[in-house]
Amino acid sequence: MNKFCDLNKSINVGFYSSIILMILTYIILPQIKQLDYTKLLFLFVVFFVISTSMDYFNYCYTECKSVTSSLKYGLFTVSLIYLFLTLFLKPLDNKIFMNNNEIVSIGLNILFLTGLHYYLCDIRNV
Image (tube, rainbow, N blue to C red; front, side, top):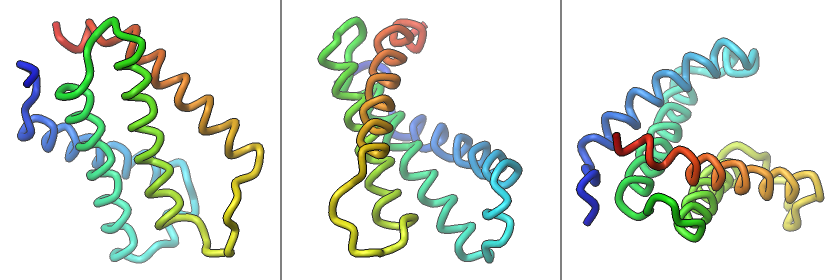
């Protein structure tokens, strides 16, 4: 196990990240202001699960200066986000296949997060 791997730290990071994400989402997206408290709480929980999982996976299952490890992080993170997006936020319209814009967006997100992980990984361990 990695020496930086700590579930309690990941939970704290997830909690604080969720608070920041909720504030930013509430300010930036006017649709969020129309949600009731139950849906806002559910959105907070989704943000918390994603943030905690990302942090835990990042510190426990990836290595620095490894393209394979960075790609694994990018795939995990984007898969987690799109899983929650597909399950909870998209309307159920019986659409099985994704359109080209969604495929390009997923690919670019994976490349972006892979690059960020690869180039900023050493900084996280300082």
